[in-house]
Structures are given as C-alpha cells and as structure tokens.
Image (cartoon, rainbow, N blue to C red; front, top):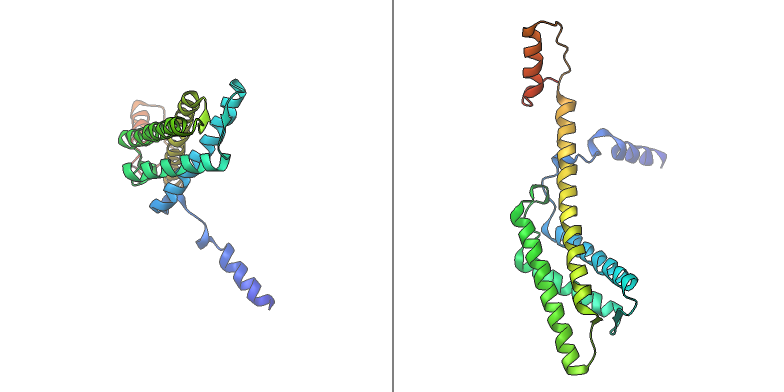
Length: 196
C-alpha cells in the first residue's frame, strides 16, 4: 500500500508535471466566458456597494439575486453576440477592447430599458437611481475586464521572457576598447541571440 502512495507521489511531484505557462496555447472559450461573467458579477456587487456608499437611497426593489442574475444573463448574451471571448486573451488587441465596450454598453442600455418598462408597468424599478448605478457598473466592469486581459497578457509575457532568459548562456566580454564595447552592445541589443 505504501509503495502505491510513494509511486503516486513520485509521479505527481516529478518535473514533468509542472505547469508551464509558456506551453499553454489557449483556454477554452467557455472558460473565458465564465471568467468574464465572474468579473461582471464582481462589478455588479462592487457597483452596488459604491452606489450605496454615495447615495444611501439606492435600492434594489426586486430580490438582489434576481437583479444580479438578470444583469449576468444580459451581459452573457451580449458577450456571446460580440464574441468577446473568442480571441486568445494573451493576444488581446484594440478590437477586443471595442467588443468589450460594445457588450457593456448594450448591457447598460437593455438593463436601463428593462428598468424603465418595469417602472411604467408596475411603478417599481430594478434599481433606484438606475442611471448612476448603470454608469458606475459600466465603468467598473469595463476596467475590470480590461485589467483581466492586461494581467493575462503581462503574465504570459513575463513567463515567456523568463523562459527565454533561462535558456540563454551567460557570457562575459572582456576588454575596455571600442571593439569589445561594440560587441557587448550588439549582444545586449539583439534578443534573438542565445547569449545574455
């Protein structure tokens, strides 16, 4: 019995099982969509608490869970429509940022419209005051979603550079004349060389 555990321990902790960020190609799209929705969930919560802090009259008339679920569903639909999750996160571009902003803007418009329709039909609102809350939600969700993509991009960049620098041979250029200084500068300025 102990040999089974020791064999299992060796397999788990040997060097072949270490997660290497530079070898990960991409995450499945559904994982990115779930992470984005989790970020939107946090944006909804943070926006509510900030709105309550500055305006104590901010109220959610329906159940908090229903409002959060409604905003998440609307956000998920527009993220799917604009395919905000389709690109490789570590290679995010300006176009991906525009898609995120369009999805957030459409979410704000639909939630604001639903809030108005609910007020007209039942004299209740999802959130009061809705305009300030929705603007705050839009700003916070845009910043958080953009920061997530920027963070992923930077982590992969750092991991890739660390791997490159670990593979380079360290050399020393000896001399103080112009030729040795020129060689040292050429080596330092060219990242494609296998020397550091």
